[in-house]
Amino acid sequence: AMQMAETLRIAKLLAMSVFITSGEAVGVSQEYVFIDRPFVPGPIYEASQSLSERCRYPPAVGFTVPAFLYSPARGAEGPSASSRTGGVVLLHECMGIQRYVLQVAQALASTGSFTVLVLNVFRESAPQMTPVDARYVSAKALAKEAEECMWKMQHLDWDAAVTDVGAAAAYLARSRNVTGVATWGFSMGSALSLLSASYGLPHVAAAIAFYGFPDNKTAPGAGRLFNPTNVRVPVLTEFGDMDPFVGFSSPSMASYATRALTQARSVTAIVQHGCSHSFMNDEAWARFDGGEHVNETCRHDGLHSALKFLSQTLEVPLRQHASLADGAVAFAGVHEQQSLPIFVLALAGIGVAAALVFMSLVAANRSSRS
Image (cartoon, rainbow, N blue to C red; front, side, top):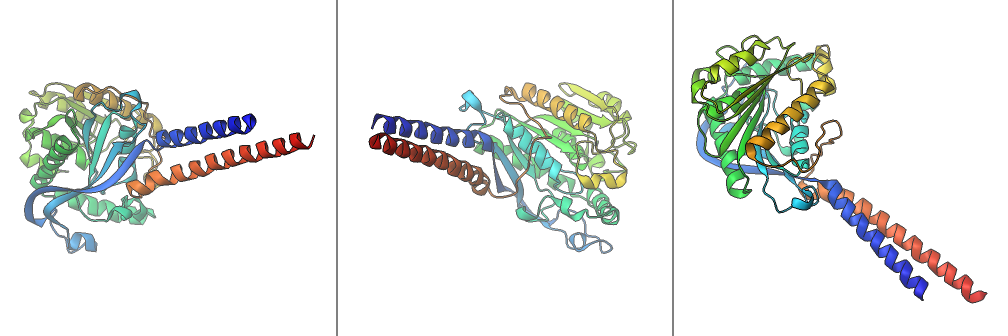
């Protein structure tokens, strides 16, 4: 009887450890939310009759902006689970929401230090249809997407997009009780991040701009609205030294940003060596252009310089290590994403417990016979 009791006690502890481990392994919860914003009836970008159906019938701005929300799940925050997180609004490229942007969101949330919104500025796909990388099946398909990308960026309603950012920052401050909000944009989103900073939006305490600046050629709508002297928050900008987009994201823009953002609380301008445009993207389709985007050193250095900047400006400690290379991205709902590993590990725990009980019964039976 004592042997049976001890076996059951060990089995119980093993099962508990399985459930605890599963909670820590999940790390990040993911939701798809709709954030209220002032109603605008017009399209988010101007229609084009020569491009795809998406561009012929662009979505209306409407009265909400959809977004992926990534939050630290139970176990991700470690011993400081009750501590507040910093808020981050990620802003995608003109291609739309790509997998790598969601990987960045997951990496940030997995530190236990940040709650992250990835805005779906173009409002053009349901959650299960993002990211847009699935459309890039060949170099020809990618070329067509790039043409649409430039159209959307050059005909975007930038003022409406800034309002989206303001609504996202207010949502994080109101609903998630964050310490402050930083914007972090990539390419088109980079220009939007800096433009939003120039509007003096409430709750926005810092801005990160990766390979994009509001100019009058590549992002002319942003360039017309942008006044760099109105940016008063700390700024981090990063550009690749192989980036060919002169005046928008070429390496010379690092020194230009430092000169132009004279009123910013601080400006950190970094040129990543051996990196081209969109250097945070390591998806297979990026190799269609020769592979110069695919550089794990650039991705690693970009992530960690951003983490350091966010930790300092939003005044939150980095509670856990973050990695893009190890970060698998799931696109299921939050309950599906959490329940699968728990279910699998729970079955494993039950199996271990059952095996121990069976072994104990066999041993007890042999003992009684002898």
